[in-house]
Each structure stands twice: as structure tokens, then as C-alpha cells.
Amino acid sequence: MKKPRSSICQVAAGLLLACMTLSAAAQPGVKLIRERGAEQRPTLLILGVSHFDNPGQDVVNVKVDDVMSAARQKEIAQVVAALTAFRPNFVVVEWPRTKQDKLDARYKDFQEGRYALTRDERDQLGLRLAAQLKLPRVNAVDWNEEPPGDEKLYAWDQYAQSHGEKALMAAITDPQRALGIIPQGTLSIGAWLLKMNSAESLAASQRNYFDIAAIGDEREQPGANWVGYWYGRNLKIFNNLILLTDRPADRILVIYGAGHAYLLRQFARESGAFRLVDVDAVVKIAR
Image (cartoon, rainbow, N blue to C red; front, side, top):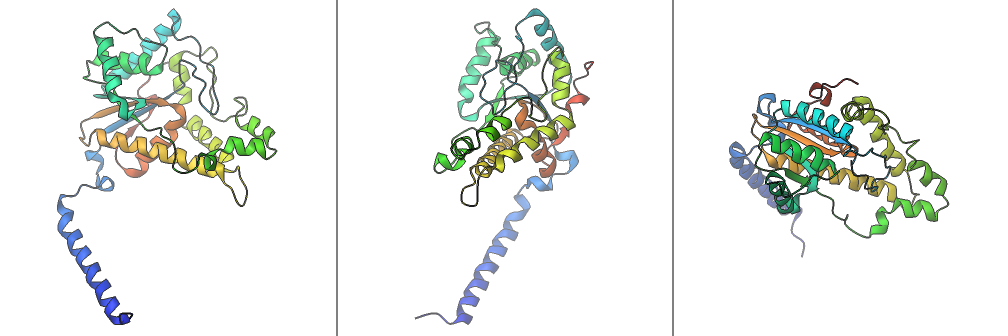
């Protein structure tokens, strides 16, 4: 037998009142990110970089000059000096948060002379800078696990190949047609990073994802699924940044693949979690 409608409404009203009462009782001790005032926010600097060791694992890959050459090492030293002046007490790199122990071991070995820096930007910029500042660790915040469900739901590249869109696939992954991708050329490392992190370059690079998101039809949307996963990945990375600290005096430097920079900066602005600093306000190197 069904309960009378009035009885159901009374129960629902009672539950709602109970929830409101519990909520009101809990509010004074709850810290909400959205309620941070400007003076309560840690300072955040996000430095987007190309992967110095040319792993070739991005959708669009850019060739990086040999950063171990004497000239490039001198340029990297100039960038590190500029970043040192920012005075970060957290240096963050693109490394799985679940493998912080391995990063700790690498950093300790480097500090004690048992590890030689590789071409990897996490080494060249992250470990080098943290050691100069005598920081206790380099922080790992990356999340890059498999998305939920069948992987075919996200395989926009396979969809394009099997649906007669090989030309579209080639166009999307062509470095010559990608927006916001800055070739290194003869630019110094510092000048290159400045151009890469300009507001115009970051906004342009973000536009590339909309061509991927459009791949699909009325029944399948693998492009949109994958871009949604990409947004979710960056939100999880951003949440890991929030977990680092909520102390207003702290200063966080994030060294990450340039493709992440636009969204991480967007999340920082929209959430009010951090006081965001632009790269060109810190890296003062002639273009």
C-alpha cells in the first residue's frame, strides 16, 4: 500500500530540515575554497614547458634542441636564476603523485651527487631549482590514469581512421597547423618559454582541443569523451595543487607540459584558490 502523499511530503520536509540543521551546525569550522579572500591565497606560478627530452608522446610534438649543449645549459641556468628570485617554497613537476617516493629518491641522490641530471625538464628545471633553494623535496602532483569505461569510448584517433577521416587526423596532429605551438628555432630557452607562456599562445593552444572534441557522430562522441577526460585529468592535477598548502605566505612554482598550463591557470582564476602570477612577471629575459 502506498503512503498518503501528505505523509511522504512530511517525511521529505523533515529530512530536508534535518539536513539544513546539520549543515548549519557544521558551517563555522568548514573552510571553502570559494571563500578565500585575496589575502588568504597562496601564490601560484605555472610555467608551461615543452618536454626537453623529446619523448614524442603528445598529440602534437615539437622538436627540442639538445639541452645538454654548453649554450643551452647556460640558458637554462639563466631561467633557473630568474625562477629562484620568485622564491618558491614548493617546486612542483609533472610526476605521478602516487610515485612521490621515487621522485624523493631521485632528488636525494642528486643532492648527494649520485644522480646526474638528464635532459628531462623535471631534472633540468625542477630538481636543479629545488636544490639551489635547498628545499626538502620536489612535489609530484600528476594524475594520468586510464579513464573509466571502455577505452574505445575515448579513441578519437581510431574513430577518425576507421571512418574515412585520415586527412582530418593528419591535420589535427600536424605541428605546422597546430595553434599556439611555438617552435624553438634559434630562440634561447628563456625567450622560448616566455613566448610559450604568453596569454595569446596559451589561449591559441587551447583551441586545438575543440577540433578533437568535434570528432564523432550522432551516436558516438569519442572526441568529446577524450577532451572531457583531459579536462578531468587537469582538474585532478589542480586538486593535488590545492592539497599542497592553504597558507597565504606559501609560493608554488609549477613546471608542467605547456598543454596543461591554460586549464590550470583557468582553474586557479575561477576557483579563487590561489593568487596567480604571470610568467613574464618573473622570467625577465630578453625576447
